[in-house]
Image (tube, rainbow, N blue to C red; front, side, top):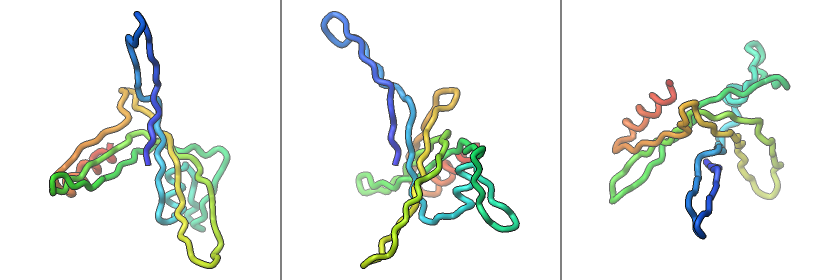
Length: 148
């Protein structure tokens, strides 16, 4: 899930709206992770996984790095499959809430979510998107963005 906050301002003159601005302020991205893998969370949150024990160690001095986040959305347009790449080049994740539930009358799956703040690059870019006709092209494009 991606939510965007904007600066919003309106200037009224001569009894009407003269100017308006709705520019990017920041965003929030929420990822649901299918497996609570310590190595994934450690990398996203700036924690260390000890080589000998495999234990993830959290310190109050840990700083989460900025990372790029991308996804490929599959769409059908006029009966034709298309693949849209959406990429956020500068995201910093924060420590997720830890919520668990015991088994009751029925089993309920819980998956952890992690939330990050979307920021813009020095050149003002905060998102890239492009649509392709083949999934392979979309994957290649997203891989190229992740490599930058």
